[in-house]
Length: 573
Image (cartoon, one colour):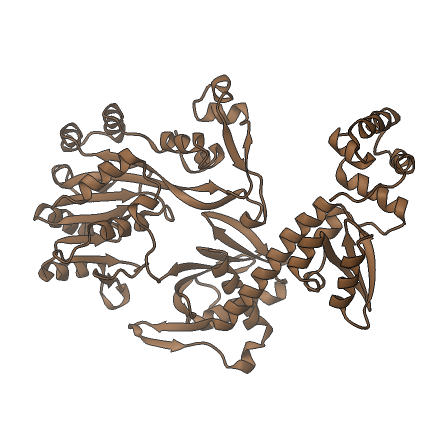
């Protein structure tokens, strides 16, 4: 509800003096207000002559109230904001903004609301003097949305921090896990609380990686959320050594060694989750940089139907994963969702009639009904050693976490040629280059051609936040980069995220897959036998109907699932 603007000429004069409007705009607005029975402020905003914030600033001068700008509202301290319950603030469009000794300043869109002010006095309590100020309703609502969400997240993070238990693992494995959670007295130590907050907030924000980077004058903490790094806090430089030392203690690393890289791991357990944390420490010119990769060891919550497959992709993939033998390879860079796709595949074909075994480093999800082996190179349990033992375990289907050397590749191929279905991953840029990568590793072309059923490259693109999704017109260069004629492209409807509290102002929330599926047809198999180049394989595959990563990404952008910028970020021509 817009407040009563009182005598129009007086308000109009104030806005003229402030330079917000001119005489012609005032005259037209007065005519519009008279014709449509509007208040002057409503008329000015409706005609686009003034923004709501300027109108309310003029109104505050007219009525003699202190005024808070939209920016000042967003700068309100959270301990002051939480003085007023969120529901009451929303219902009455008001915000607790400042606390000066025993005086509480509350910004209201309607400072004449006697009932709301009476209730505010009761909420503030005895000994607190209430002072009413004015602010624009839209600015108050935006501040309420952002600040109270932040307060709720802080509360949730504190609950998570209090529930975290850290376990260091011995070289022998999980059996030697030792609780590294400090006693209650130690929990109050600033560095311990800071490290707990960094990890706890990261878990809350769905971070897959936490980067702690020393700079010249401070320390920067960044979270990788939905595949993109975002800066979240900057602790002081003098806290850096304490942060690194605390993480080294949890991961059972050498605190005294600061010149060499170190790798370690620990497990975080809370009531709801168990997270495996891989720690990498790298000396830089400004000090030691820490990267922690967070792997949720809980139950697997994906299926093939939720990964982003199109109907024709799903049919092709499903048709191949139910075959009795052969090899299915998924390729892509680190963090592109390869393991998730393979887990979903195993879940799709899982049966009590089959013996399914996996060899992984690390085991990212625990799947009931599947035998999972964790590789431990320090004690000699390598991929190759594990696979040789699994040969004697009567397997039907096998998942190999990654083919990274000739010995592992050789065993995988032999498995697939002796009546077993093998799933694995390879680091390669696209589907055709995955085939040549296998041959480069050391697999003879005739064996690669004979064993391969399907090769799939994949990437993850961020999906547009549904809370702030809006239409927009792409720039000409964006359309040209994806080979779309600008004139034709602008006839279509495109979407992007404006940015809001739900997506941390990124415009994106969550991710989906884009895929490039290469079926090994007789023609493709012949090219592999002949050791053809990846370009020849790609051209033939496209002729046979293969949709490239770029084309699949553009298709999802056209349907408003992601943006052209995301497609350009993760794919090449």
